[in-house]
Length: 412
Ligand code: UBG
Image: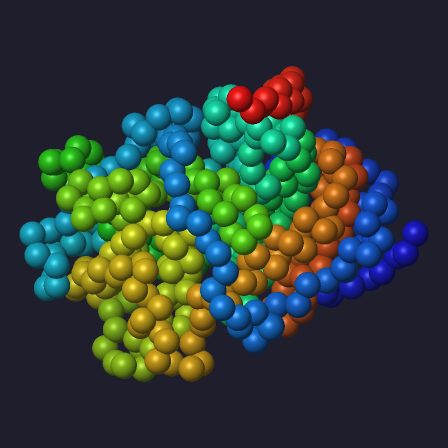
């Protein structure tokens, strides 16, 4: 067996994993191994943006196929009870008078970040809806090449332009679908544990902005006197296709606009963001280069058509609002030759998914390939059998294993 040590030196050899799947460590954990089943599988994938500068790939209009909610105690419900309604102040533009510091820290309930949820909530939705997700043609229980969180795909899309944060993505092939789940890097864990008080308050301010902009009913008004609870979430489940890759992913949605010109989900959804008020053209240019790429990728993937930004003043007040149409963001950046390109992001994502398909060929929920990336390096991977890294829960594997392959349809 060919053993290679291509792992960049700063990558952790033993990343943090979901404690619920940390029972055993297999003897095969360790250096990169070439897959036995496909000796020609490439070992690394380059990320240089210029390599992916080609026409925009096929991306099918994202379709919402389901919804679920997580309540104040982070309990799953297979319905839209946590969906909130966009309720902006009467006019966009001048200061709406929001105090984003209000309620911090006394009216703030924070999700327990030490609990690693992995794909669990999404898998629960998949298991409950598996009858509708069956593939008629390929004899697999799920009609999707990839199952993941939208946020993981956002990280992949922005990789060719990312210069700071690396990532680790665990992948398992199970009954014909590839499951992708993020693993926290050592650097990210350190950052999280050493987060400054200022950063903690800024995070709160983002959630507080959502409270000022959303109502509980379509004709309601926001109630900023309530508690900000980050356990609560409304998630949309999306099906789409990028090139030859069929995707099923879920993403958290901030609110729906009952007065949207595009009334159907996911187009009617609105993503709410806060950012520091900008006073110069240079600042705006930098904002387009650094931040807008993440905002665009996150909303473009599920077909969320609008992003509303609240500009934060130094005292924590919102000094203005600006609305961005996701599909028009490319017009804001195309004049700047040093800026990111949407086509590069999407072509790179398609190439990464193709790379994963070539590498992960053994159908086994207890086999995990860890794809690792650090800025300045290509993407590499390690292979882990029966290890701490297993992330598909037993209940899910048992539920889907019990599914018989669908009977092939006989044409009339
Ligand atoms: P994204 O990445 O598109 O983000 C959507 C929204 O989810 C964000 O809104 C946040 O409100 C929230 N979120 C996503 N990632 C984080 C994070 N790292 N820390 C805090 N908030 C986050 N999800 C949570 O809802 N709360 C968490 O504390 C959380 N901690 C995570 C820690 C690690 C190490 C990893 C790998 C993931 C964490 N996630 C957390 C993400 C979940 O696994 C899952 O991806 C997420 O719940 C929903 O998926 P997406 O919508 O795909 O996430 O963009 O306005 O800041 P905004």
